[in-house]
Amino acid sequence: MKRKNFLKLSSVFGFFLANPVLASVTGDPNDEERDKYRNDREYWIMLLDKMASPILMPMSQGKLREVFKPAYSPTWDGRNNQVAYMEAFGRLIAGIAPFLNLEDDETGESILRKRLRTAVHRSLAHAVDPQSPDYLFWGTPESRQPLVDAAYIAEALLLAPEKLWRPLDDKTKAGIIREFTKIRQIQPYNNNWILFAAIIETFLLSVDQPIEASRIDPAIEQVQKWYVGDGWYSDGNKFHFDHYNGYVIHPMLVDILRVNVKKGRRDQKELDLAIKRMQRYASFQERYISPQGTYPVFGRSSTYRAGLFQPLVKLALENNLPAGIEPAQVRCALTRVLKNLFIPSTFTKEGYLTLGLVGDQQQDLADYYSNTGSMYITSLVFFALGLPGTHQFWSGPYTDWTQAKAWKGLPFVRDYAVDY
Image (cartoon, rainbow, N blue to C red; front, side, top):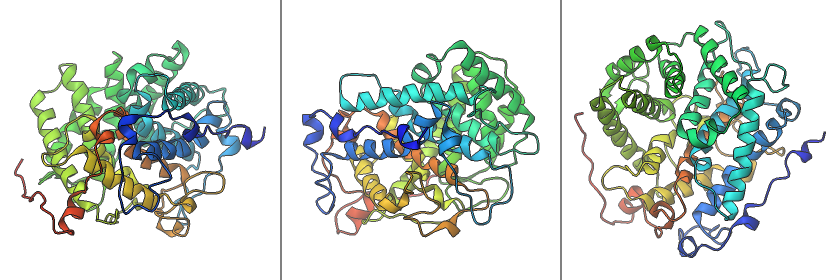
């Protein structure tokens, strides 16, 4: 079957119904593209669909391997290249889970949401069915990468249990539990990977399955020991100045603690402290964004693009942004970032993300473990789409963010280090 049969993507623009709240949002007056979309939310949903459909529509029919031919880093280290399919699927659904978790209605975006949600359900069935062409490679003790991306599948199920887990048929649920149990054969490295093992066990805990506590509690306690101050954790015994506090550490630690506190296994004070530390880190993230909508590119995995902003959008989703940061300023700042990142050539002609940061000329930026599937961690920025369109994140008028205010000579919130 030809690839185009899978990718009859619905036009988001034809779906949207007039929303007087959103339609009143003026957007950035300096944005040359401001007339293309009625509002920022429409632009974000268009981008979500553009990333998600080329992965989910074929996988929902067991055809992902047939149509998706990943590219690999020029310095690829020779690991099993089948990891690319789980990377694309797991990372993608983690990012779009909050959007899929919204209640359905008669709006255009709800039509899209139902289509993608159904595709995730069907894709999960293929992912754990050994007879399916799209049965995922779940790793071996020697081939450990799948631990990472199974963790993002677990994160997605934790973020949207009512919409992504409970509607699954018994066979698919049993398959997920089986694979999450088998993956215990993979031992994590002594860095952010310990949280991947912990979040998989935490998902099993959340659905009342037997757990291996030795993959949860030591991970929590080790990460707590790695806290170096002012919102930053080291990634292992030595501090790394990169974006892994955003990609993994803060959000996964909070989600792990939240479930374990609810189940009576950990103390509420631990969760409260982890959230405060994530808020501090997110305050830096908001200040990363320049008046032009760029941010500092440093450390490994720079090709993961906007996924680094996961703590900031997670706190927006939970109505818990740091003091002094308004939801609308986060939306406006990140919209500018997304428009800088996702120019047409950031996608291949087949519709997949390129290896790089901006456009298609930066393949050498990809790390030795990076492939096309790895790039879909950028979808974590879409957490904010789990907020309804009426929320002030989306409905608030255009608002300058911290650096935009600072370099216009406008008042902005002063910054001080914290000691928790």
